[in-house]
Length: 152
Image 1 (cartoon, rainbow, N blue to C red):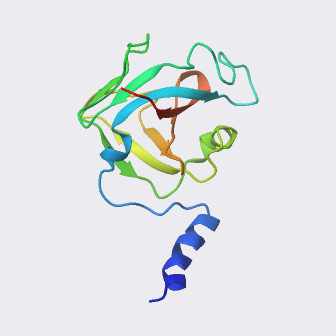
Image 2 (cartoon, rainbow, N blue to C red):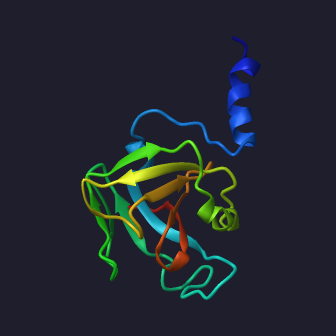
């Protein structure tokens, strides 16, 4: 099978809006110290937050193989123990406008499952990984946070 033959299914998936699933639990892609570098909110409706909201900018998180948590727990108290990440075949459409605002045109989506605790709003939480290594997470009040690696 030539190189072009291997790339055709991936290219077709990208054109159709599908993201090819990746095998395994990519915990190493997420394990790090992170900081909020950008915030995007929907352009319509009443918002409690604004783009690049000062209340969230610079906040730090630490993701390890055993825990996802804010370095200083915010009022939400979100702490996920025993996280696992399952690649999704399709990027859910609900946050695509905010992902585009953050410059994430074709992120890879992962469902986050916690053995105990919670991570973010709703029951089914998703983390997006962009091509440049940044992460995006939907957060409370309709915000989507862009995270970049931070020094320990």
